Image (cartoon, rainbow, N blue to C red; front, side):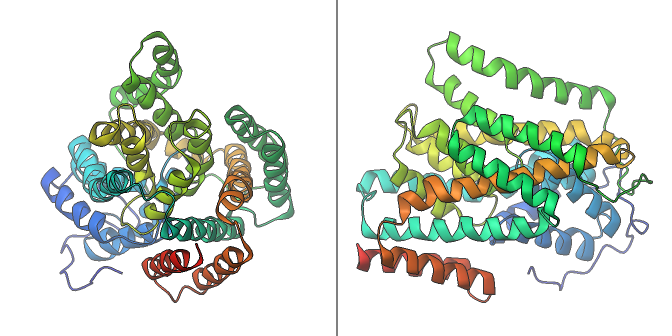
Length: 411
């Protein structure tokens, strides 16, 4: 956890309320989030704990209830939840410049690390090395751990467990990107019909004054890019446009955060031959051990894909995959009060979240496990790492290093 020796703001907001008059500056926001981007290890759930310690307990930028509602709102939206919470915090503190600086500070360190890893991996020709095989086994344990944790949270009853199993089975039978989107729509419909959220309408602690014009423009841009980019990519012969379109679509359509983007991106970049499965899983494993958001896995892929590749490809991929999150946060913040008053909508989102578990379960089976586990010792290693992850006593970076070393010995 971050250190707690900073003197809190002497004028905290009222209990449960969020500051809405942008009392800070963009450079203050950038400094705080850049430090968090360099030190926030452990994945999205850990990031939310870091944010709470930093902005609720230490700096008093907002109250407990307002922070909880911001987290809930971002869980409802597609995209990287922890990054979206950061964007929302930046906006609360310093308006639109604060939102931009919060995203930049939290994302830049891991994006640079992932780009460097991709360039070093390709330059050395180490895709088939034993230590890379070990990192692929590590990826199996990471995804299995994510499935377990998300299932406990998002599938607490038999109805949602049934939704997850049905989605996983459907995607294993029909492993197409279009099938994943259809499964999410169906999961939301089933959730609306059978899931009881157990919530009632109420007053929102998170009161955010986003100008109506800005919120409307953000939502309109989100929809226009989602529909228009694939058409533009077919119409113009530019690799940059196609790359941006693929990653924008991934960021716009993935519910459940960083781990769930794995199957969607794999279906988009591996079958066309843009990158091999071995390099794909190696990059995904590396994304687990750097600080910051898991969506910076896009930087690795953008740098490794031949056209345009390198730093340009990494920048295009990162901007593409995070832009939907930014637009959705700005557009959805003013709508939160209405969501609280619509239990049916919360039930539909609960169904979608259960479907997310099914998507990740299908990805765990194929391509993650089928690609990485090539021998019995690989399976034993994956189970051992999963046990260590479930115990919570061993740092993730130590487990990744141990897997790399074991892979070098086994392969």
